Image (cartoon, rainbow, N blue to C red; front, side, top):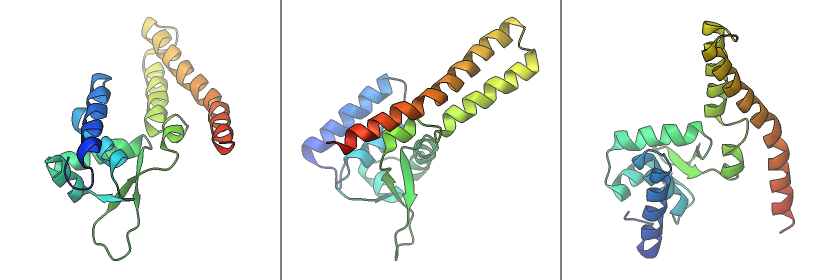
Length: 156
Protein backbone atom coordinates (compact mmCIF):
# COMPACT_ATOMS: atom_id res chain seq x y z
CA UNK A 1 0.00 0.00 0.00
CA UNK A 2 1.31 3.39 -0.93
CA UNK A 3 -0.06 6.85 -0.32
CA UNK A 4 -1.33 7.72 3.11
CA UNK A 5 -0.84 4.25 4.56
CA UNK A 6 2.90 4.15 5.08
CA UNK A 7 5.74 2.18 6.67
CA UNK A 8 4.81 0.05 9.66
CA UNK A 9 1.14 0.84 9.07
CA UNK A 10 1.36 -0.62 5.58
CA UNK A 11 2.91 -3.82 6.88
CA UNK A 12 0.36 -4.10 9.69
CA UNK A 13 -2.49 -3.52 7.24
CA UNK A 14 -1.23 -6.24 4.91
CA UNK A 15 -0.77 -8.66 7.84
CA UNK A 16 -4.33 -8.01 8.99
CA UNK A 17 -5.60 -8.49 5.43
CA UNK A 18 -3.78 -11.82 5.27
CA UNK A 19 -5.32 -12.87 8.59
CA UNK A 20 -8.80 -11.95 7.33
CA UNK A 21 -8.17 -13.90 4.13
CA UNK A 22 -7.14 -16.92 6.16
CA UNK A 23 -10.43 -16.53 8.02
CA UNK A 24 -12.41 -16.69 4.77
CA UNK A 25 -12.66 -13.11 3.50
CA UNK A 26 -11.88 -12.54 -0.18
CA UNK A 27 -8.27 -11.37 -0.52
CA UNK A 28 -8.92 -8.06 -2.27
CA UNK A 29 -11.90 -7.25 -0.05
CA UNK A 30 -9.65 -7.76 2.95
CA UNK A 31 -6.97 -5.51 1.45
CA UNK A 32 -9.46 -2.74 0.66
CA UNK A 33 -10.96 -2.99 4.14
CA UNK A 34 -7.54 -2.76 5.75
CA UNK A 35 -6.52 0.18 3.55
CA UNK A 36 -9.59 2.06 4.76
CA UNK A 37 -9.01 0.98 8.34
CA UNK A 38 -5.37 2.12 8.34
CA UNK A 39 -5.76 5.25 6.17
CA UNK A 40 -4.45 8.43 7.73
CA UNK A 41 -7.30 10.49 6.30
CA UNK A 42 -11.01 10.59 7.07
CA UNK A 43 -12.20 9.55 3.61
CA UNK A 44 -10.68 7.76 0.64
CA UNK A 45 -11.73 7.54 -3.00
CA UNK A 46 -11.93 4.32 -4.97
CA UNK A 47 -9.17 5.70 -7.19
CA UNK A 48 -6.89 6.19 -4.21
CA UNK A 49 -7.57 2.64 -3.05
CA UNK A 50 -6.83 1.33 -6.53
CA UNK A 51 -3.57 3.26 -6.64
CA UNK A 52 -2.46 2.38 -3.10
CA UNK A 53 -3.15 -1.31 -3.54
CA UNK A 54 -2.17 -1.49 -7.22
CA UNK A 55 -5.41 -3.25 -8.10
CA UNK A 56 -8.01 -2.54 -10.77
CA UNK A 57 -10.87 -0.10 -10.22
CA UNK A 58 -13.30 -2.97 -10.84
CA UNK A 59 -11.74 -5.00 -8.06
CA UNK A 60 -12.02 -2.01 -5.72
CA UNK A 61 -15.66 -1.52 -6.72
CA UNK A 62 -16.49 -5.16 -5.96
CA UNK A 63 -14.78 -4.94 -2.57
CA UNK A 64 -16.57 -1.68 -1.74
CA UNK A 65 -19.95 -3.27 -2.52
CA UNK A 66 -19.15 -6.20 -0.26
CA UNK A 67 -17.92 -4.04 2.62
CA UNK A 68 -20.87 -1.67 2.30
CA UNK A 69 -23.39 -4.52 2.36
CA UNK A 70 -22.14 -5.73 5.75
CA UNK A 71 -22.01 -2.22 7.20
CA UNK A 72 -18.25 -1.80 7.58
CA UNK A 73 -17.82 1.12 5.18
CA UNK A 74 -20.04 3.87 3.87
CA UNK A 75 -20.15 6.51 1.15
CA UNK A 76 -19.77 10.02 2.49
CA UNK A 77 -20.40 13.40 0.92
CA UNK A 78 -17.32 15.25 -0.28
CA UNK A 79 -18.32 18.79 -1.27
CA UNK A 80 -16.38 20.00 -4.28
CA UNK A 81 -15.27 16.53 -5.34
CA UNK A 82 -16.62 14.65 -8.32
CA UNK A 83 -15.47 11.33 -6.90
CA UNK A 84 -17.26 9.19 -4.36
CA UNK A 85 -15.58 9.11 -0.99
CA UNK A 86 -15.66 6.21 1.42
CA UNK A 87 -14.75 5.74 5.04
CA UNK A 88 -14.63 3.05 7.61
CA UNK A 89 -18.00 3.52 9.25
CA UNK A 90 -18.10 4.80 12.84
CA UNK A 91 -19.47 1.98 15.01
CA UNK A 92 -18.74 -0.47 12.19
CA UNK A 93 -18.07 -3.45 14.40
CA UNK A 94 -21.40 -3.17 16.19
CA UNK A 95 -23.16 -2.58 12.87
CA UNK A 96 -21.48 -5.66 11.45
CA UNK A 97 -23.21 -7.72 14.12
CA UNK A 98 -26.55 -5.91 14.06
CA UNK A 99 -29.80 -6.16 12.17
CA UNK A 100 -28.38 -3.54 9.79
CA UNK A 101 -26.15 -6.25 8.36
CA UNK A 102 -27.74 -6.99 5.00
CA UNK A 103 -25.95 -10.32 4.71
CA UNK A 104 -27.65 -11.66 7.84
CA UNK A 105 -31.04 -10.51 6.54
CA UNK A 106 -30.36 -12.25 3.23
CA UNK A 107 -29.40 -15.45 5.05
CA UNK A 108 -32.66 -15.39 7.02
CA UNK A 109 -34.66 -14.78 3.84
CA UNK A 110 -32.80 -17.53 1.97
CA UNK A 111 -33.54 -20.00 4.76
CA UNK A 112 -37.24 -19.10 4.65
CA UNK A 113 -37.35 -19.41 0.86
CA UNK A 114 -35.66 -22.80 1.09
CA UNK A 115 -38.14 -23.98 3.71
CA UNK A 116 -41.00 -22.84 1.49
CA UNK A 117 -39.51 -24.83 -1.41
CA UNK A 118 -38.80 -28.11 0.40
CA UNK A 119 -41.14 -28.03 3.37
CA UNK A 120 -40.06 -27.71 6.98
CA UNK A 121 -40.70 -31.40 7.70
CA UNK A 122 -38.18 -32.61 5.12
CA UNK A 123 -34.57 -33.34 6.05
CA UNK A 124 -33.39 -30.28 4.10
CA UNK A 125 -36.21 -28.23 5.62
CA UNK A 126 -35.06 -29.18 9.12
CA UNK A 127 -31.52 -28.00 8.31
CA UNK A 128 -32.87 -24.78 6.83
CA UNK A 129 -35.12 -24.25 9.86
CA UNK A 130 -32.08 -24.55 12.11
CA UNK A 131 -30.31 -21.96 9.95
CA UNK A 132 -33.32 -19.63 10.11
CA UNK A 133 -33.74 -20.15 13.84
CA UNK A 134 -30.06 -19.46 14.50
CA UNK A 135 -30.07 -16.17 12.61
CA UNK A 136 -33.38 -15.17 14.18
CA UNK A 137 -32.00 -15.92 17.65
CA UNK A 138 -28.79 -14.05 16.87
CA UNK A 139 -30.67 -10.98 15.65
CA UNK A 140 -32.90 -11.06 18.75
CA UNK A 141 -29.98 -11.35 21.18
CA UNK A 142 -27.44 -9.06 19.56
CA UNK A 143 -29.18 -5.74 20.32
CA UNK A 144 -28.66 -6.28 24.07
CA UNK A 145 -25.02 -7.25 23.52
CA UNK A 146 -24.47 -4.18 21.35
CA UNK A 147 -26.19 -1.94 23.91
CA UNK A 148 -23.84 -3.26 26.61
CA UNK A 149 -20.90 -2.64 24.26
CA UNK A 150 -21.96 0.98 23.71
CA UNK A 151 -22.53 1.52 27.45
CA UNK A 152 -19.09 0.10 28.25
CA UNK A 153 -17.48 2.34 25.60
CA UNK A 154 -19.18 5.43 27.03
CA UNK A 155 -17.76 4.76 30.51
CA UNK A 156 -14.20 4.76 29.17
